[in-house]
Length: 159
Image (tube, rainbow, N blue to C red; front, side, top):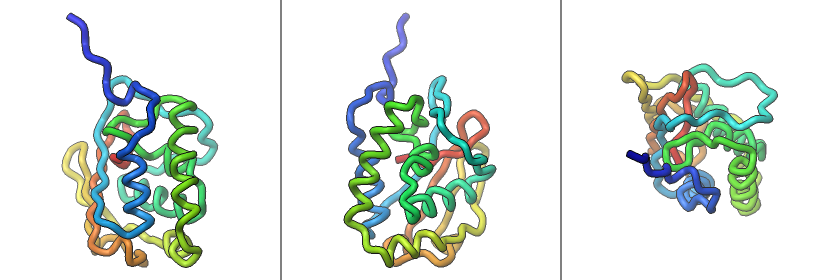
């Protein structure tokens, strides 16, 4: 019996990732979460220490976007619920994010750099970050709830 290939195995553009960035940075409604993948591993090239929990992961993703560090944001993203598994996928994600950041105001990017995530509600392998747990959030993030899941001991943002 053969197992169907997961959707994430394709290196085609990820419309859900593009939607996440557009919503995060443009201020629309969004939900972010994480789910585990089948045999996925982290893309190479990460030199900085990895975040430990869901709150730290979300904070690092949002701050990375504010700093224009699209590679760091992509390393904690899970398109279609599965972490990015190789450098080619990482480059594609980074290119998509870079294009989106070009349309974001400097004031909004500065606001993302100051975000503080103060906790998350964790239930087994899922975590939820509610709006009241995000301090110094810019207007585009007000009212947003984020969902994360853990895979292989690390938290990812579902996009």
